[in-house]
Image (cartoon, rainbow, N blue to C red):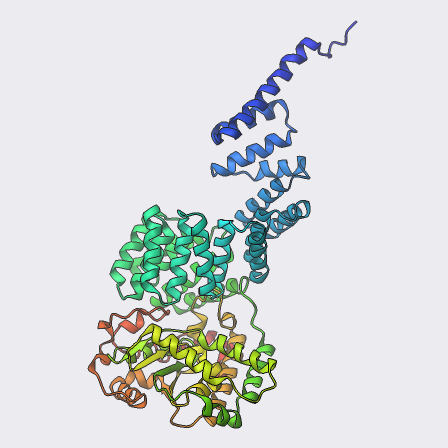
Length: 591
């Protein structure tokens, strides 16, 4: 007698046939790229075999491509296909998108244990590490992915995006160009290229890259944001705002669009709709750099409305988030670098170096702490028809590194100053062949004034000084993507300011009085006419009335002060720190 629960061969055959049919439909859907059909085919196969790892994997792929939640399907696939690196990598990517970056790292690393040459897993591991605040490790992952698969546009894009955040604009532009060379319609890479070129002062090239992105996707939010940024550089604030209004209507959930809107003008009480949108976005699970961007923007909103306690609370949160994705400021290392500069670049060194330097008076250097008034000083001078503003050139940082390496590699007592000076003059000539003076407004050049004066003993240096707490507070409120990590902590900020002061005291003591002029920001804004005349006289040029008409000057301004410097000179930012006095903590000791 047969067991009542047993199936006859004839009853099993149709079931096996149905399973084979479901599997065939799955295969056909994959081959045809029909991902909606693939979802149905995978579901059909899972009805017959709930433990089919292939079906769960196919379902996860279909869901991911359609933008549907795929995490459960991926978790099932990895459990049932423990030796499949692709599935573990896909799970890592999904976990990153969900903000679960530690788990994402574990999945990607497991995929790489299974297949060390899996370039996609190296790329996704880089993304997770970046979001965990490990940019150097992330950069190594992207490079490893490209070593394995040189024509990997996504890895090139991610590498470029990270280099952009780290302030490596030339290298970032190269990565973005390589990505678009492989994938000519890569809109996001054109946006990244436009941003890198903008930071390099190549406004027209940046505009062309941005237009290229919009040719492919006219409503792309990132491209619209960069175009708005380029407009604000040129002082076209109304057009920039119109672009961002359009972008906000098209992409209400875009964090960058929302944040950028706060910076095209002064916010008012009528902007409560913007605040509600920003607060709603901030409540969502966001990567730290996006969340920080929003909180900086909300801090600016409350500062504009003079709600200073709420503004400081937003800036404090923004800086706390920024510390999670930026390299930590090392106080001890920075102090030692200042000690080394003071020890090396002394009076006897300068006496030897200046004999080998250039006699050119063409370069003019504006130095000081960031946010101290260097942009305003540059804008005043560069409104003069005989002066060209070169922006913030990175030449002297790399030049100092190369110079110190060359000294370490040779026993010669000769100082290779002359070639450095010639190289710099060629750079200035390429930027402006005929201006009598070319202004380099890199504030951080205060670190390299020994080498700069050695190379150009006749060049003039303008040292802009602002009230120390106003300077530091403005830095703390500014969103620097990856640089100036000292600005994210008030104790670090106070330490950095003291090191800056110590080094500037050294330069003031050893440089000739005719080489350097202290420019008090507060005096510049309260007695602009007299100080403009003094600045021009110091650099050897006659008075020109254009220097007093800053809001009519059309030259681009790329720094965070782009809106302020196009307003008539005023003292509204003097003693700003008093509004925040109860929050200042360690900054109080700077005065």
